[in-house]
Each structure stands twice: as structure tokens, then as C-alpha cells.
Length: 364
Ligand code: HEC
Ligand SMILES: [Cu+2]
Image (cartoon, rainbow, N blue to C red; front, top):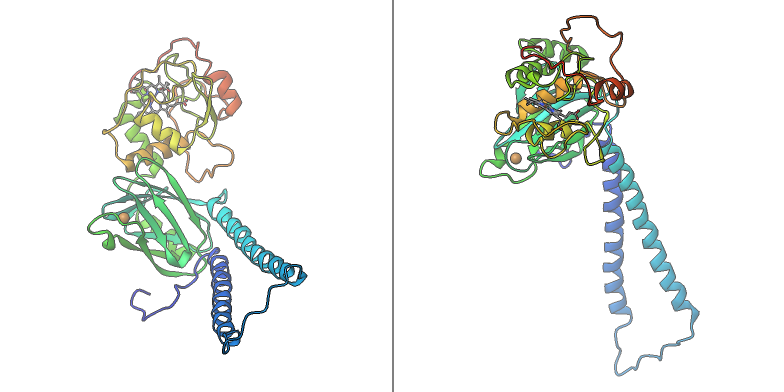
């Protein structure tokens, strides 16, 4: 596709593209219509009502109802036309900002000047993104340095990629092919070289492609080894029901609502986990002390995404895609029948005053 000759418009290769194009066409048509109408009226009236000889203008009839009708008409019609733009635009915007629940998860880290991409099953790529056709794909994006912007014109999607934050973008590719990927935010000298290709493949080719990259473990597995490497397991008990009076159990945490020591509540999502690792003092879980050290500088953005994936794999949460293969937790002793739910977790996992059967190091 890159070698193709001049194209006025990029191909429309995602489920949303047609909607964006239709709205765009409406904007262009409305603007063109009024531009031409106004230009025509300027010329026409200038000629028609030009001053002839020493003719004097007729006095204006202040009580004429015609002027009022005209003013109402030319206010109400443009108002209606622009409200259509607003409502239509808002509806597309909402669709674009709400990833469907069972989307395939892909993680993107922007960095001067490349895109690093990780698939949940473990495959990794740079400046290339392979996805299956007709599947909803949800990207979680972050940056290691400055602001970038992940832009795939053929999908009509564009999202800022910010340092210190997770943003999301989703699309459903509808056509097999290779499409340009650009960074759409000036990010330094080689910004223009921060480009790549999105390959949309059929399901079978995609599976085959995935299996080729499976030399390494899944993101959750790599997250687990990172978890052990960094010593998280020396504090956080790994067994589902095990209590450690000083540190919360992370099993079943993801997607639940966490109560903090100042009485506020926060959803345990990707951003919360990331913040807990980098700035543990920012939000303290109710019933626990601020003894967790910061891991800022010890773990990269890629590593953080893996830790998040690992913690997500420890507990399924409603509304969140559980596409990650859960990593089996090694247990000694009897296993409770099921993963704790949000409530049972609150009951048995985080009561705070649990007996101090501290998880021993190497417990993971
Ligand atoms: C010195 C012990 C210690 C270590 C090491 C430690 N933590 Fe923590 N962690 C805590 C304590 C105590 C809390 C609860 C207080 C707070 O919120 O800071 C906590 C809270 C958390 C939370 C929020 C939990 C919740 O229930 O809301 C997450 C997530 C977390 N830690 C992840 C990690 C990860 C990942 C690592 C390794 C990179 C790690 N921790 C290392 C002690 C530790
Ligand atoms: Cu960039």
C-alpha cells in the first residue's frame, strides 16, 4: 500500500471509518454550500443593488414583518444544521471512546522515535502491529518520554500517547491489508521517522504469526517473574486466601473498588496499579501503613505493563476482558474452591487485622 500512487483519501478499513467519513462529508458539504451561497449573494447584491446615478435609498419600513421572518429563518436553519454536527460528532466520539468489552488487548509504548508493541500472549514487535481482521482491538498506550500520538488514518483513529498515563484506543479492522501508522504529535528531531505499519490478517494467519513469536512467555508470565525479581512477593502474599497483616493480597484486586485510608474509593484499574508501584504513598489502602517502597526508576514502562497484566491475571473482574490466560499460582495447603469475588475479598482478604502469618520471601 505504501508504494501506491497519490490517494486523495486513505482507504476506509475499520468499522468506524465509514461513520467518520460520512460526518466529514456532511461538514464539507454544509461549509461548501454556505460559502458558495454567501459568495454568490455578495456578487449578486453588489450588482443588483448598486447605486445608480444619484438615486437615494428608500427609507426602511421599521414595522415590516418580512425582516423579522428573514432573521428567524437564517438563525434557526444554521442552528439546526450545527446541532446535527454536534449530536452526530458526539455519538461517534462516544463510540470511539468506549472499547467493547471483549476486545483483544494490545499494549503500546511510544518512545523517541519508535513504537514498541506487546501482545498479551507474549509476542513483541517494533513499529509493526499485527492484528486479526473483524476483531475489536483495544490498545493501552503510554510513553517513555514525550507526548506522541498513535494515528492510523485507514482506521480514522488517533490518540495521544502521554508519559505517566495510560490512554486507550480501539478499532475493529474490516479489511485485510497493510496500513500506515504515524506519530501525529511533533516529538523531536526524528518525529517524521516515527512511522510503522499495521498488518490486518485473517484469523488463521494471525494465529500462525502469534505462534511464531511465542518463544517468550505471555505478558502475565513475564510480569510474574518481574514481580518476583523486584521482591513484590516478599510483601504481598501470593496465595489467594493467605493473609499478611501488613500488606494487601493482590489476588482478585483488578477491577474492584479499593477503599483508601482517607475514606475515598478508587477503582483498581491499570492506572491505579501503575501508580501503586511508582508512587505507593499517593494512595494508601485503608487498614495498611505506607511501608511500600517506590519502584520508580527500577521498572520500565514495558515492565509496568507486564506487572499490570500479571495482577490482572490474578483476578477476573467484571466488565474487563479476561483475555489473559490466568497464571496458576502455586499453593501449598488446601485451595479455596473459587477465586474470591470482590465481596469475599473484602471479607477475607482485606480486613486488615488478620493474623500475622507473613508471607515468607520466595513464597511466590
Ligand atoms: C515492603 C513491602 C512491599 C513491597 C516490597 C511491595 N509492596 Fe505493594 N504494597 C505494600 C503495602 C503495605 C501496601 C498497602 C499500602 C499502600 O497502599 O501503599 C501496598 C499496596 C500495593 C498495591 C495496591 C493494593 C490494593 O489492594 O489496592 C499494589 C497494586 C501493589 N502494592 C503492588 C506492588 C508491586 C507490583 C510490588 C513490586 C514491584 C510491590 N507492591 C512491592 C507493601 C509492599
Ligand atoms: Cu512521536
